Each structure stands twice: as structure tokens, then as C-alpha cells.
Length: 407
Ligand SMILES: [Ca+2]
Figure: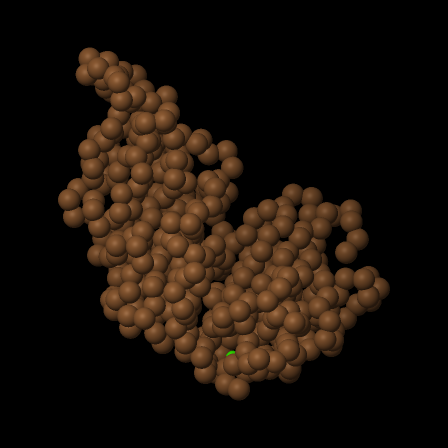
């Protein structure tokens, strides 16, 4: 079932803050440029680049350019524009030559925060490129197949991380929850399940063995779709690199893990999913706890509903084990409930499903934990949902536990 138009205007959707430690290099008032709509600059070339404070004389400007090319080295550091976009600090000619646009100053006004926006039919080899819908920041209501090709910016790039800063496509069909209307498809990389629907804030990692093509196909005109996907190129020695086989990779001692198209009110668990979610074991942490997210939209939380849940009904109890969970399940190696078990003698389970997060059979959600490292989950869904058309998927809060603590 297609989604209604978003209630929040696109202009109100704010981008997440930049990574910690990145220089917010937006220049002094008057030097930054608002991101132009992609339709304006994609076909007419980048806008003229303002450079330095507006009252500078050309003499001063020439002097600055001279300094730029004779003295200043650009380490290509990440910068953040005043509108919250990520860019790369480059000299103005470099930014222009690479097809970016300048959005504010950086490097003590010697450089520009250069933002790369791409859309259908283009190729990118710049770190931090955004892939946006045609006409962005307006939504796209048409039928299309929109491709972006990603090439490595350097030979030692091993992975691409895609951050879905904005991602709204039509949802899956309502009977078996298959992405028949709109699809996000990756080719040329590790297997990535086809996804659709609402995925703001989610992410995936792709293996970068060669060129990777992102495709978004849309059908029908009744959905106001939009997407803004940030593509980070990750070099092989980088500590941002995900472990092998991880479609998703979380760092930090706590965080939120959501299945694709998870949304408590109109979201639906997607069929045909098959992927691993990895969590980096932080230093001095030995185990991990999971609890299901708060779901204020439903009488009983639907934030862990994988099997057996029908439309409009309360979530069903928990299920575990491979005989009970043989259609759709979440694997967490040797997981047990916190608090109700005696350490060392516990019977843990590996597969969870049903409508409540609990390692035992219950209608009440539990906090569960696992000591198995590396911390890794695996999610599988088959191609059938009917009659379980009320499965929403999962949203889990994870918290790593220190090695000297008890679960
Ligand atoms: Ca299923």
C-alpha cells in the first residue's frame, strides 16, 4: 500500500549533525551559499563560487589565490556546511573541476566546503557524495529508474557506507510485504536485499571490489518520494571499515537497530530479507543487552513483530528456536533474559520470532543479553506474510555491558 504524502514538509527535515570532531567550516556570515536545487546546477554547471568576505577587493583576492597555491595544502578534510551537509575542503578551482559546488568557506577562508550532489545517470568518485532524487529538494512523483554509479576514489577503498539521511519510497504491497511498487537495488557489490518504504536514518555497507550501481525504480504517481543518500568511501585500513559480511555496522556502546521500513504506525516488515547486523565490541565491553523500542502508537508494543501478528490485533507472545521460528526470525547467538537466569547454567536460544522480544515464552517484553563475540545479529524473512499481515519488523535498543559488570 502506498504511503500518504509526508506530513512534514521537506524543508523541515533536518540533516543529522556531522561526525564528532569534524570541523564545522561554514564561513562567516555572508560567505556561505545555500545548496541550490539539483535541477538548477546539474544541467547548467556549478554556480559561480563566492570566495572570501564580500567586501574584499580583487587585489586581496588575488593575493589570497597566490597564497593558496603557493602555501596552503588542502588535506581534503571533511567540512560541514551551514545547512548541515557534509563536504570536502578544497580549493575553489578543484571544487569546480570535480563538479561540486561551494557552500561556505573552510581552511581559514582559503578553501571552500565543496559539496557533491548527484542524481540519475551520473557517476561519482568523490567521498561524501549525496545521491538525491530528481528535482531535490522537491519530492519526486513520477515513474522512473534512476541509477548512480559509484567508483572508488582511490585504489585502497574497500567499502562504501550509504547513509539514508532521507529515504521515502512507496511501501511494500500489503499482502506479502514485497517491494513491488518502488525498489532500492544495489548491483556490483555484496548481496543487498531489495528495500522500499521509509528508511530515514538507516544505513548499509557495500563491498567496493569494483563499480557499484545504486538503482531506485519507482512506479505510480501517487507517492511523494524523496531520497538523499550520503556515500562515504572507506579505505581498507580505516577504523570505520565494517567487519566482513556485515550489511549494517554499528559503533558505540549503545544505539538503535531497526529493520528496513520499520515504523510503528504504517510501516511493514519487509519480505525476502537476509542480512547480518554487526556491532563493534568497544574496548572493555564484554556482553550486550537488547530491549525493544518504545512504541507509543500501539496498545501493546509492535516494535518486535516478526511472525504471527495479524492486522489490527495486539502483538502475539514471543517465540524462539528453529522449530518455532522457521519462516522469519532474528538470530542472536546464545541469548537469554536478563535477571531470570543463573549464570553458567542458562539455556540460551539463538532464534527469536513472534510478537514480543523475550528469550523465554512470554507476552511481556524482556531485556535480553548475549556474551557471544563478535556481537552480530542475522535477520531472515521469507517471501510470504499473509495471513500475518500485521508484522512490523523490529526496533531494538542495544547497550554494551562492561566486562566487570553482571548482565
Ligand atoms: Ca514472512
